[in-house]
Image (cartoon, rainbow, N blue to C red; front, side, top):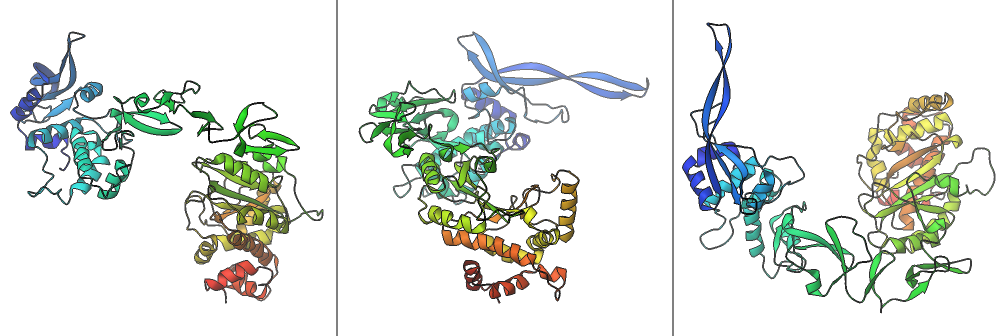
Amino acid sequence: MKPIVMHDLATQISKHDVLNYLREQGYEVINRIAFYEKWEWDSHFGRNKVQLVYTLEHAVGFYDQEDHRFRRAFCISDQGKYKPDAWNFHIYDVYTNNCVELSLITVRGHNGRNYGTDSSIADGIYYGIKGLDCFYKDGRLKRGFGGHLNRRLSGFSSNSRTTAIMLSIAVNSLDMTDDRDNPTQAICNKFGIQDRGLFSHCHFNKHIVTLKPKLKRVCLSGKVVYILKSEDPEAHGYEVDTARDSYSSSTYYYKLPNEIYVDEEYVDRNSVVMKECDHCNREHIDEYMIVHKGETLCLNCAPYNYAIQNYSCQVEDLLQFKATKVKANPLYFGIELEYESAHKMRKTRIYTGNKLKDHALMKHDGSLRDGVEVVSCPAEFDIHKPLYKSFLDDLPDNITVSNRTGMHVHVSRNALSPLQEGRIIDFMNRSDNQNFIRKIAMRESNNYQRPYDHSLRTALRVRKKIKDGEGLYSYPKYSNLNLSKRYTIEFRVFSTPRTYKEFMIKMEFVKALVDYCQLAWYNVGLKSQSYYENFTNWLSEQRKSYSNLYNFCKEKSLCA
């Protein structure tokens, strides 16, 4: 079952076996004479001379009855330019579409890479002649079957006909203990195969798993699925949704007779309550309506608190800074929370808009598949707390966290002295602090937040650039502490919290570190001041002010 590449075929199969097999399969094989130019040095004339070398080649294809012509799939030669006396099985002039039509290969492109099709053709021919040996004598699948199939799906032979046959064998091996509703996932689970989207199953015929080119993509009641090209959704009770335009030429929309498409989803018209928006006068699901200044509004007509802004939107331009007293250089914090919310974004918009109205806005974020970034206005530390407590204490299940989400905290740079900022920079990037920081952050380092070779002097260089009016683009954004913003420093290490307690541990860490680095330490060297053990010793003395952080550090044995 090991894939056979083109150059290995000549050592495994004779030329006559290959040609006889192709003819037996019903392919047309036309013999013809070809030539190539061979250059040799002529010592008599002191120059190269060219010699035409004639070879026998075979064009493989089929006769098109409609066009009354021979359509070539590929050519093979029993001689080659570099080994003229050997059977090389050299494949060239491949017409991929014709090869797919002849089932020599299964797809035009495969595995997301630019693999050549010549080796896939050779692999299919080899196992067509030799046959597949996938079973023991008692009928059980051989032990290495799943590993072979997995390697095939991830390599050049993923579009070989042999791979398609092995997938069919895998389907037939499923039993009643496997997931019959999702045989694609059942095969992946049973044989340890990563689902790369190279094969799927028909939505209507659960027992058929096939390569996707044999399927068509349709949207049934809002869910995108694959069905056999021979299947018709109307035969299964669906009807064409003529009111919706296809976002892709290969996708068609169908709905059940009692369904309507409203508020970005299909619903049963008889099971929902509809109301008319006072602004647009259109019907919407009552669950997705809000009351604003005595008016009943749909989310399309609702204020900006319920909208998802563009990523480039500056929240501070729409929401005002919040402080208890007006100060010259206030210490304020800006909070960004990233959440996933697949298929239930309208509920997320209503919940977030109601809880954080006039304090935070939702924005699109390219790092999220189906989610939003909730960005607060600049505000003092104590002003944030009750609002986020209300938001996080009742967080619904449709708002979720994942390894793609994170929490970022901005701190106003003008409120920090250069030395204070330098100490914070040194603390966040010291290698011997990283284990402590990661426990507070509750996630490991990755390409979006990792330490850099920054220290106390970095703050002086940053301040000089700001004073000279220069940009800060040379400082990496995706670091533990993002220094590329002119007015803030950004802590990027945290995972997104799901509870208010978790939120406060991370916020108190930022506030405590800012306060700790503001102090003057005359009995401790600058380098020692940024070591986490000195910070935790100070935290123990300030435990009443940072109770959530202190208790967490105590539970994790991080405090003295």
